[in-house]
Length: 77
Image 1 (cartoon, one colour):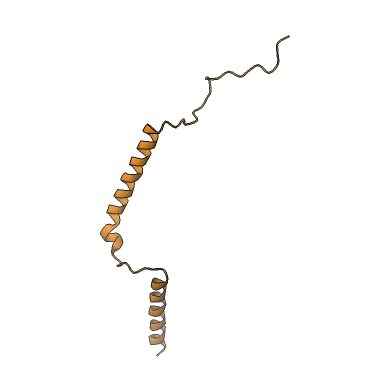
Image 2 (image 1 turned 60 degrees about the vertical axis):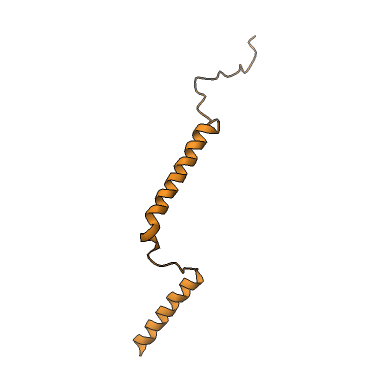
């Protein structure tokens, strides 16, 4: 009787967690759609970054070494 009660409680807890977290999707979702979602996300991310890097005209704070000269701190006497 103890094993039966333990199994029923375990199954009931698992079902409760699924309902609480809204997990009503079939368990094979990742095996069915996982690669498509991964490829789609990668293509989207690459396209957005390609647009940002080539079309927006953002100045990317490149190093000013050897490009600027400091102003003199004091006037020469």
